Amino acid sequence: MLNVKEIRKDFPMCVKQDAGNGKVYLDNAATTFKPYSVIEAVTRYYTDESVNIHRGDYDLSYQVSDEYEQTRKTVARFLNCEEREVIFTSGASASLNLFAYGWAQKFLKKGDVILSSEAEHASNILPLMKAAELTGATIEYIPLTEEGELTIEAFKGAMHDKVKLVSIAHISNVLGFVHPIKELTKITHEYGAIISVDGAQSVPHIKTDVKDWDIDFLSFSAHKMLGPTGVGVLFGKYALLDQMDAFMLGGGNNARFDICGNIQLKNPPFKFEAGTPAIEAVLGLKAAILYLEKVGMDEIEAYEHELKTYAVSQLKDLKNVILYNPHAGTGIITFNVEGIFAQDTAIYLNSKGLMVRAGNHCAKILVEVIKTSETVRASVSFYNTKEEVDRLVDALRTITLEQCIDLSIM
Amino acid sequence: MSDYLKDPQIHREIIMDHYQHPRNHHLSDDKTYHKAHMASESCIDDLTVMMKIDKGLISDVCFDGVGCTISTASTSILTDLIKGKTLEEAKSIINSYYAMIDLKELNEDLLQEAVAFQNVGKQANRIKCATIGFKAIEQMIKEEETHD
Image: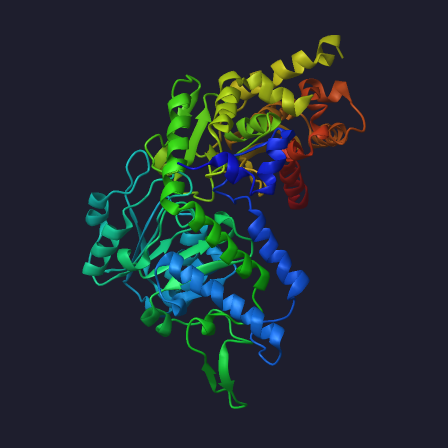
């Protein structure tokens, strides 16, 4: 059992809330708060070691380069992969785009099929749509259940010999279902296809094991897992990374080049990391992972699901609240209030100090599945408390359309 | 201008009414209608407004789509206001509405029920919602005028 009260002392944003600023943060699927250890790692770079990496001629650069590579080692341990399979990017969107450009655009051809789902985030599906347009491949969508879940049976039914790439989120950012990645991967490989997993919502909340799951690619962002903005990771199996094209060329990714245009790139992961990266953010990512490991990923998953279950048990008694994903196993609660537009609900909750997100959550084609275009999403993290969930439930118990309107016109 | 339009409670009731029972809430298949699709980048409103112009007169106007209370109600009120008006009259209603949203002046005679939005300008994040339908009409009037 987590000691949430103690955990909250590690997060300056939580400390301010507990000192009485009246705010409750329930938009953790968008980004998370940062613990002091992450903030210190970032500022230490700027105050004590503010030099570039991979310039080993002086001690300080050697030291920072070493710390930078230590992060790669930490990420590899966290994912259970090799260090050389960890590429630093600017975030999950950059990782997914790098994969779509470097692998999908290079290897897919006319007649090939990309299999995906209607619950995908724009950052996953749009780069694939572009790859399909350029290669002549087509995208097919695995039918989801009425609640928006992707089942093994539906996946088996959608899979066929022309599928060369399966690309899905491990956890949907709208509905929070955990998809059975290990089984999906096994089936994918039986058909000789590869699987790219959008881990933006899963890596921060459940234990990741790319080796056990046998997945081919995984994309995620640091900022959704206590780390800084501006850094993310693309994991890829080394043999696949070796064949894949770099999205960017430039400083740091080539071994040599000459005036005739002969370019020899470095080996992965460095061939994908042209230009000076967000060094401080990478160092911050290491501190974030160390923090998550200290708390324990299994404990985080269990507690966040407990909080969500608690919220659902309270909310389902409210006659005015429509819940879209009561059975999803993570900390995402997707709902609407009867007769009130999602954005108006979110603005009302804001007036009560509650921060939630309204909209289609970048998954614009999911509309067809859950039959509503806009929802409110409350997403918990392990530093949230039951009292905070109570604040949400209380606010929703008393919400009226009149109050929502008054907030905008008074 | 009757006094009842000064009461905040009345403002709320006007907006509730137009949100729950929006006027002219449908689209037309008639190809001679002007059409403006408004999908704001910063919020989730996604409205289509259509307008038929006969010899400088707005003979019909309608809208449909997904919108919050403020965007739906303000667009509904606007369709009521400009139906049967000339383009010049519609333009002065729209300009007068913008002046109200900017918290500059309030022309109750021109704006009628739209005075319900007289304080929306204080909430910067709702201004887009309160003007989305007006921008659509403005765009279509401009289209008609450049076409002529």
